[in-house]
Length: 253
Ligand SMILES: [Ca+2]
Ligand SMILES: [Ca+2]
Ligand SMILES: [Ca+2]
Ligand SMILES: [Ca+2]
Image (cartoon, rainbow, N blue to C red; front, side, top):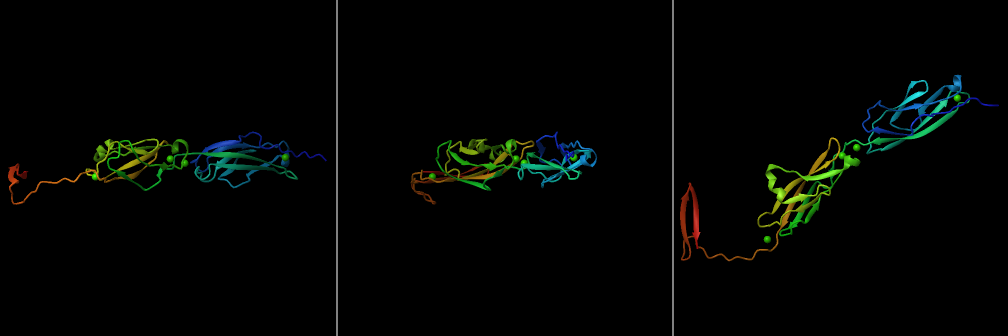
């Protein structure tokens, strides 16, 4: 007995799709067509998605279907889906055919950079030579490609203009280097903020505080000051001079 019920299924479609992560619910991302050469019931075909995916099939007209977004897409959770479509005709017995293809989810810039620590504390000996790498402040971005490509900069403000003469940051690596040798006797600590910005459109950024603590070294000889008496003595003489309403005290040894 020859069976004429014939199903040549799903001949004209792509095998890969690219969709955007924020493709809204109901967005059609592909057209699926199915062909069954039989007549009557033997040629009537029903298509369904066999596996669990955030997509569904909607009938357009006879034997044409749209693959439609039916759930939230997030590349950071699932970057692709294997979708298996099954087509079954109404013949007796029914014939069926399946086809599998892959839907790739493209990235959008929906994650800002995250620094590896909430605050970076750097301890630096005074008199350390210029150009020393003090710290690498690095951040991570969960996106991909340019949405995760980071650049680092020191946040400038009116109150820290002199900072630009003190430290430099490598915009690619986040390496902070000193531009001067610090003197504990003049400066014991200072603080600034570093910003990491990704290259997405629009870009996202975050910042972190960097505390620099200068550590003391024994680099001053003891100094003996000449004896001095509050009430005057043979080697001390006091004069009070009034200038512009201010009292200046001159000590002459
Ligand atoms: Ca058929
Ligand atoms: Ca990002
Ligand atoms: Ca993303
Ligand atoms: Ca010192």
